Amino acid sequence: MGRLAIKAENVSKKYQIRQGLGGLQTSFKAILNAPFNWLMRQNGRYTHFHPSETIWALRNISFDVEHGESIGIIGRNGAGKSTLLKIISRITRPSKGKITLYQRVNSLLEIGTGFNPDLSGRENIYLNGSFLGMKLSEIKQKFDEIVTFSEIEKFIDTPVKYYSSGMYMRLAFSIAVHLTPEILILDEVLAVGDAGFQRKSQEKMGELLSSGATIILVSHNNNTIRNLCERTIWLDNGAIKMDGTSDIVVDQYSKFIREEN
Ligand SMILES: Nc1ncnc2c1ncn2[C@@H]1O[C@H](COP(=O)(O)OP(=O)(O)O)[C@@H](O)[C@H]1O
Ligand SMILES: [Mg+2]
Image (cartoon, rainbow, N blue to C red; front, side, top):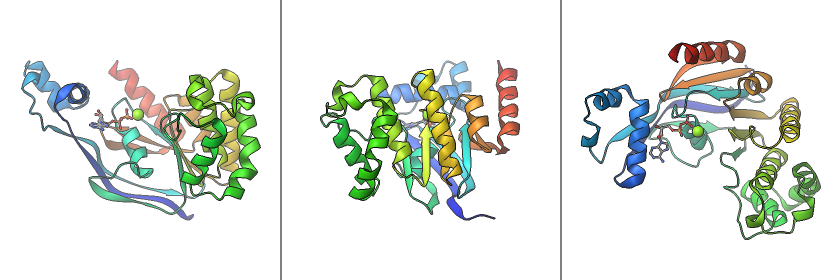
């Protein structure tokens, strides 16, 4: 047994589906996801949804992650992957259960969420670093590497609101992987950027892993999961369907998806 990095104990997350258009969209997602709601739809009764409908995005999730492990999270849309990452990142709280962190987490859940649009790339690097609890000297030391990796040297003093989505993405990714993450959490962000940048990103992830970082990665790309993660957790309808060696879990998941279609 190695040292623990993350411990998740019976984590459940309940969402309240509200009235209004946003709530309605959520209801439709819930219809697609929950068999019970699906039955209601078959009866043509989905218009009778009570406004305070609740859905369980996560159901009784437990797992341990050790220092230096790299774990893939897979599952269909709406399975609860992003919800789990948000709870680990402390962006949202579980409704039941708890997650204990033994290392510092750095997460990139949506591109640019940690950015202030009116600040320059340079200022945003410092801003993100301080959010992550880094010392000024640490950020300074990594600064050039971050800028070079992101390929935005020329625009480093331009407010990021003028960046293209690609520039935004590259800078956000570069910050996430360079600011000494002990636990790095990425939600479907490896699929963006051109082929060259993707290759560079995967290499960088490999380097992080060999330097002992703990990585949790949501991806719909089976090869990315197989290449970067030894272990994979398959979420289905908010619950853990399988947790084991990536090759085995990814195979089972692919088979499941094929049989379903
Ligand atoms: N803020 C929210 N309010 C209500 N429902 C939500 C919210 N966020 C996610 N959900 C619902 O929780 C379920 C899991 O969503 P999510 O974690 O985003 O899945 P995934 O990332 O696997 O696609 C879905 O049914 C989704 O509609
Ligand atoms: Mg998601």
